[in-house]
Image 1 (cartoon, rainbow, N blue to C red):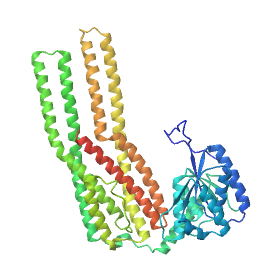
Image 2 (cartoon, helix red, strand yellow; image 1 turned 90 degrees about the vertical axis):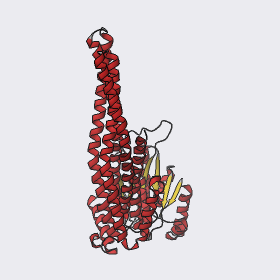
Image 3 (cartoon, rainbow, N blue to C red; image 1 turned 30 degrees about the horizontal axis):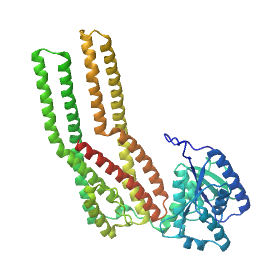
Image 4 (cartoon, rainbow, N blue to C red; image 1 turned 60 degrees about the horizontal axis):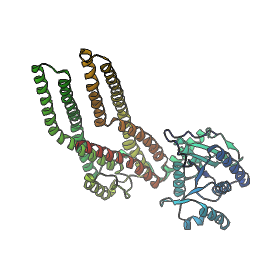
Length: 498
């Protein structure tokens, strides 16, 4: 079995144990539980020898789950449990003897959590499986290789893990043999996804989302978004250009002062240099005054537009409470309350489950993926250009300093080398100031992370069989997007005040 790659840049501390999180899913009814139990013991021993410290993540249903936890207990592996229901409700799914075995594992677990209330029991089991997959590094499954007969089955959990790129190790529930973890029947996984989509369509007939006209409240929000987006688009280029001009004018004035002090020019040339220096500072001061208003408009309009776009994206989903206070900037709290109130009042706008998934994927996920992919290359280019140029100028400044040390002081080459060693660092400062004002490095890393997160959210939404699982994926991705807006807002507000 192939060992998981170490997270890049994540070297474990010598004093802290690095734990591998092993998720588990399996059938409740087994043809040969004794053979499965033996294979689980063997597989866990192999995994423990390969990965070292392992913590297990699973439910504690009767059947394969209980056998897995008992095998983990025999090897002293700590366990985290994710229950589909509260213990009192969960107990109803067990026989008396099976519940007694389950209680022992509940008492041994280092952590025990319960998923949020779901529409049905099968949906709750699915949600527990989803959380297991998302929390684990690799997944061990006791699976018969057959497609799922309903929501929340082992086949669906395996399919979801594969879709997220998780390593999956399968113990064949029929023959108790371990399949190659990288060759789990892809065709069957695809059939599972197709069956899931069929079941959802049968439960909630699909209707074209275009057939439902937007309500008056939604039209108002769309108009609000268009207003703020237009204002941000109009002021953003001006604010960025003015900031860069101010930086360069200050550095230009500093360079003129250095040239005058080092070269000792004729009287008339010295006066001209001084006049140019004062003129550059005056222009920078005037631009600083002009810069305040467009920058203020930009930093206010863009977060407001993104908040409106967030509500437009979720507008026709089933209503639920949204935890926005902690991630919305204080200046937008009133707008957030207004949008939330309008959204909650517009009960007629809710779509069916299948429609809601399709509309959110098309109108929110796909558009955000396209945007961040388009922004990724310019951010990469700015970061590469500024950092490469800064390194080159630093090396030239070092070379100038060395030449100045070696050359006679009265020589013209000494003067030029001395100037290079003093002025070129100003060029480095200018380039780094541009990189900071453009926020290139942060945006590059952030866009890459957001693209990965959006791809994962797309998979979670496509496979979500219930409103709870859909909303869970939506809240996760929207929280990421709003955090990006809040972070951007804080950085631009800081740059405005300095």
